[in-house]
Length: 321
Image (cartoon, rainbow, N blue to C red; front, side, top):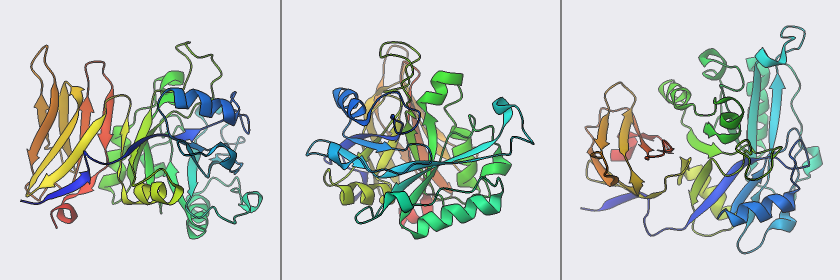
């Protein structure tokens, strides 16, 4: 029976941080320092998402390292209504440029600070029409609820894990928000990111680099190939465990991974399937039979350190074809 490869064991995986700040905005490292330190940790791709400032960093690009043109747009609730910054809701959205060649970065409009759904959705659509992909970031840190993010439109990605938010306030992991988006009809892939600012030195437990990453399976380390992989969802999000392969054979979904203690098949409803390792043992593979009635499925892995990896969601009727 033919296998439908979602993530091929024989493909090229590239480690990426798709939410990164440098001295262009409020990060403490220069872009060159970011490249140097991240390459030491096995990263090949960085999206510099500095606040309200789109710049390219193509001088960093070489055969082993690629930068994605990106920026982070902030739309904050009015200070008059929320004078305490600690409880002020905000929208933070990352935008990734699919057509950077010839674009004048300085002419990319930043959003008006009008905290309405109409303004937020209009801004997302305008950037989408110009060739950007959009990620909705860190809902817990943003002091937002279901009512704030369910009506968003034209999203491509969701930040299921933000290491910087986890370091700062233990509010960086948001799988429930991902499922809420999926259950309301959003077709979004999930990212794990650092959102690093590096205000604390390396080695300090408060340093916010190297804790969340997205693995991208692309044909090559080139801009077009990586963007194509992002659009097609040939990615997964992780705090640590690596996924080596994911495929469908008939109605059976199989995953291969680093040693973990638990692998779960999460669905649109409450019924899922779980594979458990016995005490003192680990799993490196699991298979789940799909009925076709799951709505969507996504796999969540947890290792012995309590670190998670998450696949994107796959809508079952389309998956089974």
